[in-house]
Length: 285
View 1: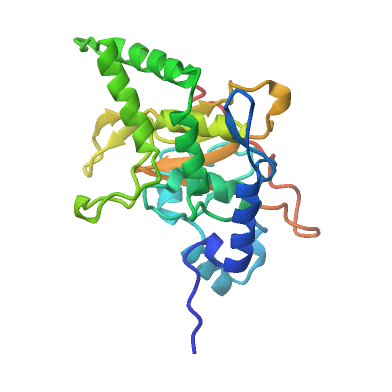
View 2: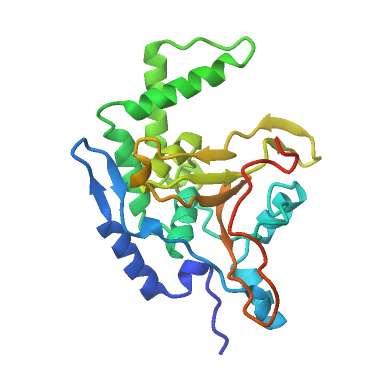
């Protein structure tokens, strides 16, 4: 009897993954001002073993069930990923593509398990819906107005229209599944501002590596991609935050965690690079 391979890292040990999710829920806290955040697991980072140590047959299986080869190939060819020789290579890990991949990716990066129970998704939605001071809405409003003003012949929105757009942004974070007749992903896909909110919930910077433009099947560019960048937890004091960032990749409306590998043990060789990610592009812009 052949044992079926797990579909992702978090499916490799369902019991342990369930316990980790319970710890995550137990770490949800709220300030007196009503700001929700996650404590405990946010300080951790998953590191892969040195994969080259495994026999090739087993390594082929790992690549099949663990590594997002499509993401890795495309971003490396675009010189978005692993172009810096002094930094340790990053490996994109497969996560579910159900519309909740941003939360899955962040959770796997910290704990090795996905957001299957939607705990992070619900916290994200509640944090945006209960933004009593409207601080997040004001940040979103400034960002949208600045981007809108940069477009020639842009439309001028009134206050009611901006309010309606913000309500749409909040509703996108809802953990309620899409109806089957929608013929869409189970959950609504999230946008750049949701990453900023997540960074503040985790009190940890998030770095997104992605191409700047969207290409069609012929390789021509036809739309900008705004996800790439550094998202800082600006609602918190520096001493209240985790200093090491969460590093995710983005391609074709899908997020994956980018994990480092452990250093090869002696006597295999020297260190394989720094645990770091470049904050500039390959052309140093």
